[in-house]
Image (cartoon, rainbow, N blue to C red; front, side, top):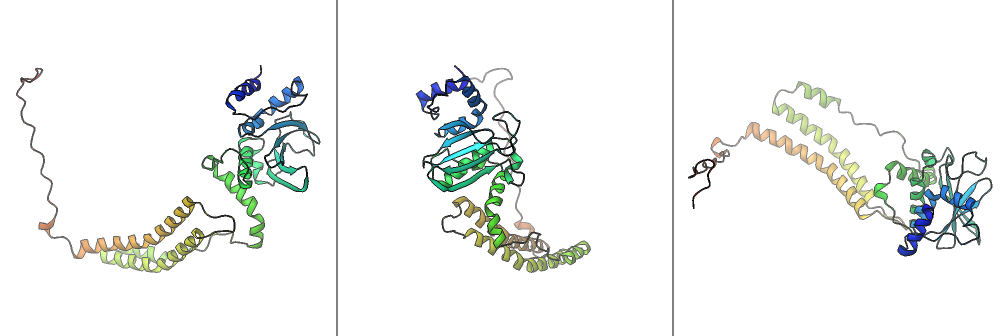
Length: 300
């Protein structure tokens, strides 16, 4: 029995894999060879309870995946132009979702075979493809394995976001360059000439006062992001907490700068009296001498 046959035998006992297709080609050596060449796709999908089959597309073999809503996925290499690479090992993959009774339903879920797509960087790699399927099925509310977003590389997540937000950004263009920095050169120049705590305090006080409105302005916008709620989406609780903490940290920065300035001024103009200085903690008394000689047990 081949490796997939072993998996299927185990699945009959554990229910871990969706069953193999039920047609006359399943036992044919050529079909089993094709199935083996695509097992890196079919196995993780069958682990999600999704039934898969191998078919011939326009110019290459594809994987057809049945979904619970009677639609299906088509996973395969770019069909035009055809490629000379062996089945199951193309330069890139395309995943589409279609419905046999609804010709209007057609969507591209993943495409690493087109150079201008964000997924193109993954080429023939399978994990990003499986994650894209997981993510889309989760959005559709279809049963599948949970999306492990904590293990997905940030560049993959941002690639999906850039793709899905492209039309929105075309209607709502945002600045592409960093915002201009505030002019702080006078503060740095003065700091280089400062000699006393009073002079440093003057610089610190003016720096905090000058930058506080800018920092508060940024913090208020971050709070605005934290309060966002779309028609069908909202922040996760963790995301909202992190955004609020970020805004609070920005506002706290000015407070801490002011506290540091006052600490220096107290040390210079109102030092604690010597008598009020903290006395050193007395050392512990030495351990009592042992009544036994070295190498002997103490007497009872």
